[in-house]
Image (tube, rainbow, N blue to C red; front, side, top):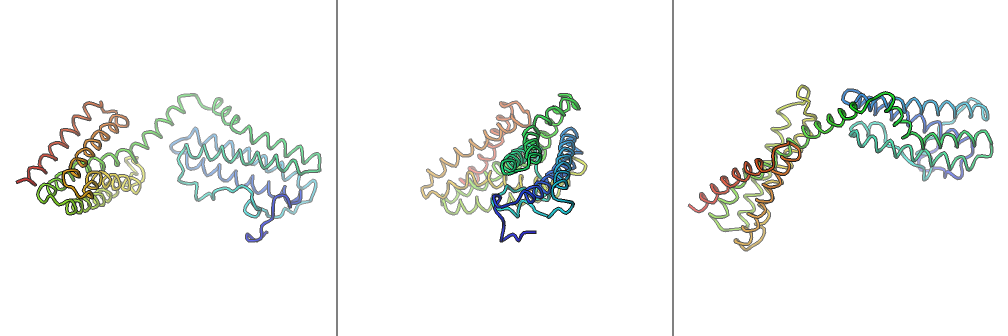
Length: 324
């Protein structure tokens, strides 16, 4: 085993070491594909079956490499991994890919196949044994064809409805985990902080004091909303996903919603700051209506009417209290 601080260059590897490296690489790739399959099996069984099949194909590549290695060099295979070779492509550890989404897994798999193809092409160029050269060239072609293989497996084992259903499931999970709590937070942060911010603004006409009140209200509301969302539902029964993710989405968007119309009060001139803050409020409310329309399928004008009327009422309360 090479010391990590004293890695070899690929050009300095012997053919024996190149084959040993290829065997270890195929083992790693098969392990990653199986991890993908396990992560997807419950929610995306069709995609899981594709990664299962790709892992089996990597196992077949590994066995072909082992057979060729034993033919030329005997049964002892030295442990040479990617990280032992300077400039060689790397793979994320399995524990780092466990939380990737379906699209990220597909993209990562495509990059894996491209890297493996380039490795085998480069290795084939350095081989002086005709049989080894042919095997490495065949494996390069196989890695290049993995996407085609996956497409073929899809055609054979799934109909189009399976993938439509998976896409709908993924979209629904995204909405439940990120959009819904984030939207609730944005609405709360944008609307609930209107009254204290504008009441302070019109009562004091001091922009710095108004900013401090807005900052405190926004951050406080964000912390409160984040913890409330995370503690309200662990997602096990509702299927709404990780409570930590939902808590972060809700808390961050709540804070952003309040800070949007608090930040203009960093401007020293009261009426300039207030005019910009009012403009920001309308942008925030229209953004909420757009999100509701796009992800929650609420008719845009109905969503706009709801948030604009609600926001206007809270804004008016703040102005009246601050001016009283």
